[in-house]
Every structure is written in C-alpha cells, then in structure tokens.
Image (cartoon, rainbow, N blue to C red):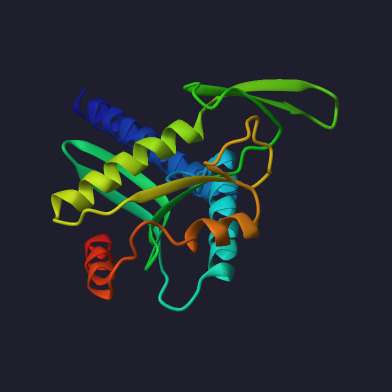
Length: 212
C-alpha cells in the first residue's frame, strides 16, 4: 500500500512538471513569434500625429518671419485664478505679446465666429463623407488671450495680448481678424506697431516668466 502511494505521488509530480515545461515552451515560442512583444507599447493616435506635424510646420513658418529681438515659445502652459491654458506658440517682441493657436483641420468647416463648435466634413477617396464636431478655435484663442493677460498682470506686467488662429489648410468658414492664413499674415500680425512699445526690460521680464 505504501509503495502504491509513493508511485502515485511520483506520477502526479511528473504530470505537474511536464505541464509547466509545456507552458513555458509555449510562452517562449509566442515571444519569438512576436505575439507578446506588443505589450506596453504606446501609440500616438493618428489625429494627434497629424496635429504634431501641423504644429511643427507652423513653428517653421513662424520662425521664417522672426526678426532680431523676437522671442518664440512653443507649448507654453500658463495658469491664473484657477484657470489653465496650453498655448501652441507665443511670440514676444517690442510690439507686444502674441499667441498663435495652430489648427490642422482638414476638410470643409462650417460654423460662425461666435459658435462654440464647428462642424468638419471630410470626403474620402471612395466618396464617403464623414462629419465631426470640433472646437471653435477663435473662441479658444480668445480664452487664451484672457488667461495669458491675467497671468502677466498677476506678475505686475500690464500688457495687451493679441491672439490669432493659424489654420494650416486655409479652410476657415469665416472671415475674421483672428484668422491667419499666410506667412504674410503672421508677419504683419506680430510686427505691427501697437499703442505702446514694450521696453527691453519689459520684454526680458515676460520672457523670464514664460521660461518658468
């Protein structure tokens, strides 16, 4: 009886060991075939990749019109009075402080300057038309102007802040002073003399705040 019990234990042990070896072998085989190597990968969504490409193109265009003494900041984050905003591009020079919000909306846009949202229609090569609701960038940049102006004011700098939207596809549904559609528009917007020029000291102080 004792011998039979010992033999039974040995058989059970062998079955468990063999099962573990087969499982490990399967996992190694899957890893070699690439089946388990995708775990942990982080992909940037296609629409975000398009947005990043658009921002880079916009920065390239802005840089092409900068003059001596101009300071360009990208992806700026500011907060004041509990309100926070992310700014695609901020230019500081003797003419003032300028925000440029970059949008790479493809397709046809429908909406008004005061609408909170716009509709975007895009037709594929197969002839299918898709619609999507997007934020009105003019409303967005107006909010950014307010927050950045308050941010600077909280630090003792009273300065007029201008803001614009750069639609890379030049497909604005409205004619607006807030919309920039060309390099010439950007150049004029950031180099037009305002009511009061900023002193070098003021420019340096604004630059220091945006660098924080």
